[in-house]
Structures are given as C-alpha cells and as structure tokens.
Image 1 (cartoon, chains in turn brown, cyan):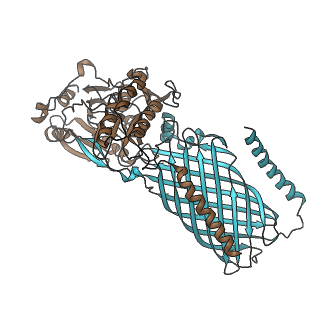
Image 2 (cartoon, chains in turn brown, purple):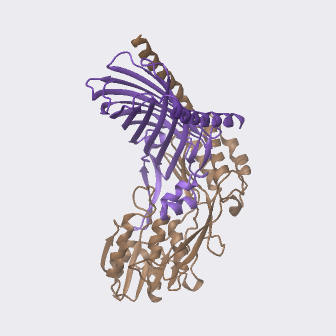
Image 3 (tube, chains in turn blue, green):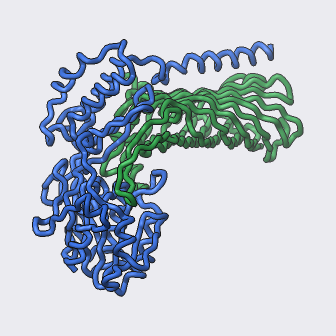
Length: 348
Length: 288
C-alpha cells in the first residue's frame, strides 16, 4: 500500500514534468532559416519604434528580402540576408551578431572619426590620472594648468542590474575636487558609447546649475504603428554637494552615441556649457537585445526620443553650432595634433 | 468571464465557510497546538521562456533553499513556505559566443570582440496557506483552504526582466498517516485572482527606467489585475515526514510549479523542486 502510493505520486510528478518540457517551447533545434527570418522580421514589425521617423515601409522590406530565404541556405547566407534587411533601418542602435559575423545597421558605411585619447594624454595633459574604474581620465592642460580636462569613456561599466546608477560614477566627486581651482573644464565625450540613464543623469547633475527638462521618450507599447506609451520627461537638476558650474566646453564626435548623446542633450540646456567638435552619432532610442532560437543576437530600437522642444535627432545627431563645428583629420591625429581639442581650448 | 466569476465566488465561499465553521462547529476540540518548522536544501530543475525577452528557453538547475512551517491548532492548519534560488540558466543565449564591435578610445579604433551573455535568474516565492480539516479522521486527514502566494522571477541579461505576482489560490491538502512515525501530505493549489507585474510590452520602457533610477518600489505599481484569463498556474507539492524524536523529524518532498502569463507577451515556466531537510517541532502537543 505504502509503496503503491509513493510510486504513484512519483510517477505522476515525472509524467507532469516530462510533458511540461514541451510547454516551455523555444527549443533551439526546431528552427529553419525561414522561421528565423520571419521571427526577426516580426519582432521588428511589432516593437521597432522608428519606422515613421525614418519613413520606412517594413512590409515592403519583407517583400524585398523574403524571396531570398530558403530552408536549404547556409548560415552565412542567412546572415547576409538578415543583415541586409536590418541595414534598411540605417540605425546604429540596431545590430545582428552571430558567431562568425557582425553587422551594425547604421555602420556599414561608417567612418570612424579620427581621435586618440592617448594623443590627448601624451601631447596636451599634465597631472593626468584615471578614476571610476578607468571610465574617467582627467588632468590639466600643459599649456594652461587653470584649464582642466575630463574624458568620460561611457555611461555603464560591467554587468547591468536593476540599478541605474553605478557606484563608479561617484568618483567624479574626487575628480572635480582635484580640478576645483580651474577656470574651465574641457569635458570630452568623443567615442562615448553610452550606457545607463541613471549614470547619465547623475554625471550631468555634476555640471548643472539649473533644473531643465532635456529629453522626452515614448516607448512602443503595442504592435500598431502608433502604439506608444505616454511621454516620459527626463530632466537634469543640480547635484547636491560637489559640482562644477564654471565654463564647460563639451567635445563630441561621430562616435558619441546613445547615453553619450543624452548627456549632450542634458548639458546643452545649461548656459555655461558650449558644445564643440563634430556631430554625434544620432542613435537615441532605448536599444533592447533579442535572441534568435539559434543563438544569434539582434537589437531593436523601441523608443522615440526628442529634446524638450520636440526636436528628434535620430540619425541626424546633435551638431554643435556652425561656428563651433570642428573635425579632426586622420593626418593631424597621426602626427599628434587634435584639432577639436585645440579649438575647445580656444573657447576658454 | 462567467467561469472566472464562478471560481471567484467559490473562493469567497470557502473563506466564508471557514469563518462560519471556526465560530460554530468544533469549539470543543482540544486547544493544543504545535508548530513544525523545517529547513531544507533542494534541487530545482526546470525552465522558463520569457517571450518579452526572446523566444529562447532557459534551462534551470539550481540549488534551492526552503523554509517551511506548519502550525496546527484544533482543525486549522497554517502553512508557510519560502523558496529561493539563484542560477545561471543554460540556453543558446549563454552557450553561443558571438562577434560584436566596440570602440577603443585610447587608439580611436573600432575592433571586434567575441562575447557570451551570462544570464542570471533569481527566483523567490513566499506562500501562506490556511486550511481547515474536513474529512478523513486521523489516518487520512483532508483539508481545504486558501493560499496567498507571492512569486518573483528576475532575469538579468542584456537588460533586467522582472515578473512578480501576488495571487490568491483555493487549495486542498490530503495527508496519509500510516503510523506514528510517518506522514505523507499532498497539497494542490491554483491562483484565481491576483496582481502581477510583468515587463513592458517592448521589454523595458522609459517609465520603468525612471522608476528604477529614482524610486524602485514604484515599479511594483506598474502591475495589473490578473485572473485566469491572463495568468494560469498550478502548484502541487508532496511531503514525506519521518519522525525520529518527538521534536525532530526528517522531511523530504517535491514541489511542482507550472505557470503561464499571457500579457504583454507570454511567459511560460515549469519547475520541480526536490528538497530534503530537518524538521523541528515546537508547541504544547508534541505527540503526533
């Protein structure tokens, strides 16, 4: 009797468990190229937020590329078709990653703007150092020690958790204290790859003198082309404690992207900040990664982002005023001259 | 909707029945009570597929930590269960290395790197149940009651995906007591109404990021009402207790959990948690 009941219970649980494995789904061995292509296309169709802004007819994109898909094609061939499809979006926040290849939707025709932090450190700085786990590089100018320099490499470090503000950012306080006797700071975010909104807000608040709304976001919340959430305003407000509100010369370039561009939007609202350098990358939307059942990864831009006045800089990027627009040359950087940096210095 | 109304009505009726029976029926029963508290370590096997993230099944095999307390007084049985585990699930996501592109500011050059994504899964559940013994005498006691349970699932990968639910579940428990040393109990429950927090439609959104940055507790307010139309779940557990002293027992068991959230995208989850540990008895009536 005892054994019968025990065996009965165990058998029931085993049957439950085995049968429930198929309930989870998403098994990696039940896909075909057609299924992968359709899965990817449908995900963009449902969650990509910028079709209207970029004036893209996603159905016609499918009509264009679907005939190139066949279940007998190789992985490399499938990758090429999928890559061509996402390149129609021309969105630097959209990528496709496979074990053997990589494609950035906005990067196929990308030119990396000449810049070298090593050149800046070697040729222009004295008393340089790093802080914030290497995310900050700082120093003073050799030619004028009353001018400080801070380079911010990005707005996230390591693994992303639920926390939006990471502890390394607080090292900005010691950096600003070291540079507190300067008259101006060149704040360099060229090549800044972006990161977490909380880090952006925290670091922007260290250079803010007044509270301002700097961006408005709307996130896709349904499959319809006009299904967006209510707008969410992002604002910058002066930090408590250490902050720098003397002249700030913000240097950007084409590799300043995403959170780096939010930082630009935030600081442009402040009257003591001047932007110089060249136009930012123009990729603002929250970019969320997806996984195909074969392990390939791709990302989708799910937000529309504007500044407080409603201007959308997606693709266009944020351009400094014409008078302050400066580009580096490859030859200049190779020979140790950073034209953008030298122009920033002249703005002091 | 009719079905939901009927089930809700049945659940409310159960609560009313408890109240009436408690106040009128078995008033002459002995007032002795005892509390069996057990701590056990388990092996949790299962998986989930969070479509708000991707159609990618994550396989979980984790050490689980379990705390259980059964308090009996008169014909009432109060059960408290707490479960926690952490795992790095296996899937094509964690098993596939892919190429990506990054930028080196020192040299000002783009470069390619190979990366894998480490997925982390946190799971917690707290359950309180109140049961009333209605049949079976001392050898086959059976009880009905209600369970309030709270389930939380957090996945950290490229971005956090959080699901949390608080639900009310009608429940039934059946025991078999073959002798003084041994007891086998089964409990079945399924939620009928509740409150659930699910990821936004796109996986994350501006409001959630703002709350995460400024006031994380507000994220809980982003949840919504759930019932059988958008949340289906079954919990089944089996426990075997072997008493070696009046105050000490060995306890082993298994919990089977299966759930499906349908909004904004599906989340399917199955797990079986095998556990074993020690149970300590407190109270006025230590004799079984």
